[in-house]
Image 1 (cartoon, rainbow, N blue to C red):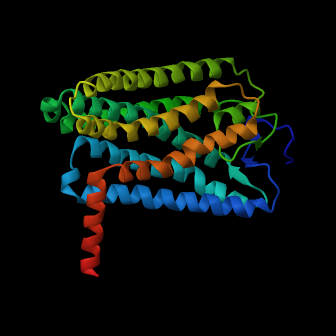
Image 2 (cartoon, helix red, strand yellow; image 1 turned 90 degrees about the vertical axis):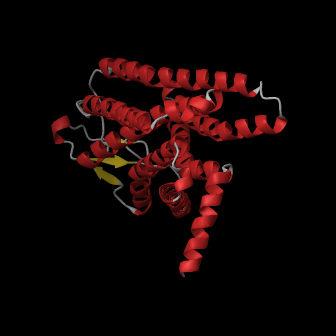
Image 3 (cartoon, rainbow, N blue to C red; image 1 turned 45 degrees about the horizontal axis):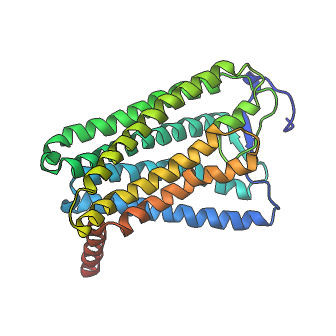
Length: 313
């Protein structure tokens, strides 16, 4: 079947992921770049989870959320990066229909879950700074588990609905996806179905996901800034701001890239691919570095773990 051959939804057995439209000799460079970034993602996020699990001093709500963030970053980057690296060497660059559905569902699940988790982390910082005496009472283990479970539940429901509606479309224009993974806009370009309902549902869900989480984050940080500015000592203000700046950096990169990707006109596919790299690979790579390099407790736990391993060896 040719790339541009008209085909029925029932006849589609695979898709072709075009990836980046660059000269073939640059594929090796892109493969090495993806490999380096993915290796850093694996080492950073697995390392962060190990540190949090094995150091009792990090048994707090903030690190519970941070461990889950590392888990999410690890898995949604693993949904994208390995297949993209394989396709740099592949002649066909194909992905099966079932593989595309799975990739689409899992990426949607983890990216939406991360949005809600970042809102929960903002609320955690709000309680820690604005109500420190009640922190251990309000941010109980039960509440933390509920917030994380709720984040996964929202991610799962959203992804199930979006995936089922997207793959109910008839793909008759082509089976060539102009992207390096199965994403909603490139798949919509292949459809000859009426996209009005899908776009309205997608827009509604985007609003229900983005606006509540953004409002929680903004309101939390408005209260945090107001509280921190009342701290008399400069050292106290710097310490309070340092605990929040890492989280704000992560939120800015993720929401900035996602907003550019899905809220701007779909007129520059190559630019969209570059923007999508920010939240598929760049954010999962930077998160462990940002939180570890700016966090005294994580650095101390890392040194302690390295010393223990050195002693055993």
